[in-house]
Length: 439
Length: 169
Image (cartoon, rainbow over all chains, first blue to last red; front, top):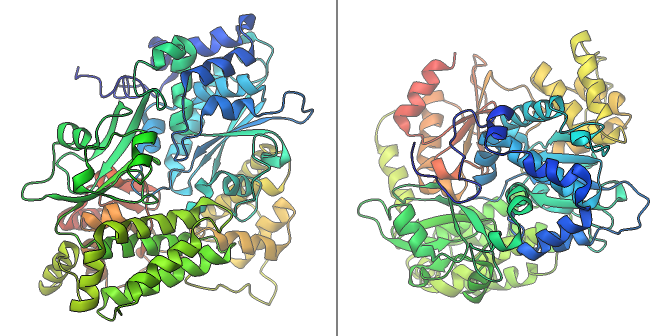
């Protein structure tokens, strides 16, 4: 048996057969759900425990989960819903996929506890369309849990009813945004809604709804079992617990790693990922999915927690760590990211719809040697005019990385204007070399 | 959106759910407090069965969930995964977003184009392959990554792609 891959969510993750309910239960699974719903501890108490744990949303925004739950009105006569955001669409992020594929029951138990806390009787798991295979895995787990009396008309004999359903999206990054996700789940085009009202007050079908990310919910059974103080043995005061980071790019061992929040980025990359592939050096790292500004190699000592990342001018985001090597052109990399947002903008808000398109055009000019002196300031100006001017965070997500790249690597942008080409471009060179070989 | 699909003006042919799918459609409708919410699940049922969302399938879905046909068309075109044209038996969807691009996805896409003689969105004459570049598939830790229909293939290079194509008859 190899060493555990992490202290919490990854502790048992590679246990053979973990997907089956018997294996999950043999490791103590569903004990927490049974203990809480058994009648001795009130739902409000669970909200307090999660609040005290300081658990923050693992999907990107980092909002305190317990606080979110506490916003659900106590006296609302409407049904309440728990919606699990399993859309995992932030480029660079692939943790929820592994978590659900290997340990679906931990997610179900987390949803069960969240639903108990806010007194919901229905929960939906919104999976991105590409996760059809995962939907089958989760559906099988739901059927097992129902068979064991842990879901259905009387959860663990408590008299409280809970049904969990999966819902498959169909290809749209925007549906990872919680209000767009709710629109999509209601059968509309996945476009975001203005907040407030926040989903906790008016969410799914205009009813009180808690929307939480997969990883966030999977932390809940651990917290519900062991308590808030126990959870706080990892991480920092304001960012307690662990986080799963998905590391991609030319490191020796890319993949998912569960580490305590606050760990220096360099430690994750050097000790866990084995450093860069031979002969390569780090130029920059995007620490929290493609939506956040990059950090230059000089800032790798920054801690992987919400506060340290904010102080460094970026965001912890979803934990999608994308490593960019010295031979990669920053302008080219940002062009790739900007085209992504241009493609994924839902078209609702003018600054985002037109701005992402406009930025893409400027990047194309720079990349094809037609860049003009004023294009760098133009990029900044367009990005600045997207920031904060759209309904949802997609616009900001497109603008922030561009502004961060100009701030840290303006010289590379200027090189494109003066030399009409990239200073270095490993990707392009590899493409040209492959092109030279007959098919 | 790179393409602007248009709802055909003439009425679509009338399709019916095969008996074995009727129960599945009913179950999808039962999962939600209103019929509209079942539009994506029911579109999926149609696409799994017919391989694409033909005008007739779109009409059937609209009737099944009680929405006007143009509204369902607006929904089906919003999401990238509904095929409004027939696709090949093996739908090759190579991720081209940054994590995969850093690991050689652009090179692999070029390889597929040359090898299959088709470009983005095109289907081979024998109906075996459709090639498409797609955005991040959540396979970043094992990039480059490609979905063939719903199956993930990761850590790809030219040799692995060639071996995979051989197996996909």
